[in-house]
Image (cartoon, rainbow, N blue to C red):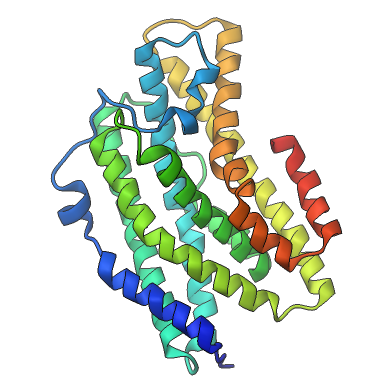
Length: 310
């Protein structure tokens, strides 16, 4: 079945296409440029790593913590972009015999997400070549994608919009202004942010389009799916936080007490929840779209589910 987008939507898709053409970048020529990650510098800003919650760490240990978390930050983006790309390709079917401007925008989106996955694989290889052995990514992209894509399209698009929005928040509010970060790491997320800014626009358009198809009962079920997806994300974060805390403690040049080790584990999980859940949920743009689509009781249901993570 074809779908004819409104004139306003078509114009927004057209603007996204124009921006995609204008900011188009290449991994080797524009981002990596033959460089390596500088392990004498931080990867993740303190406002994202929340390293200030661990006052007993030395300056070298604080830098290493930023690198461990920064490595995971990049890897988790590569992971979520697997299911984002699959979902956008799926919804593009509605435009095959309809709005070709919208179809081009979604095809460009998909192409850029594939490029981002390759970029983050390259970043992981660069990090592995410079950092101590023992680090591991615990979740597998295809397993995560199968779980996510088993939920309703409305809920997947809601989660995707949330991710694209907090990507922009993190770069503009934390990464861009921090002069103590690895220049290569900053360039990775500068270029990632440039394209994700357009993706967030498309995500919202597709989320609203999907919402218009649903009955009240279907939307209510989709809210439950969104809650389940956030729970699934938190499960991934809990597992990765434990692994990263153990890696950090094991690779450190001194022994931490049992209490300090517990504090490290708690702080890493808190940081990951802040990065991947809380910072996006608290943003006015995401809440504005979500609130416009659901009822107050449904919003309260989501808030209650999020409360233990906040």
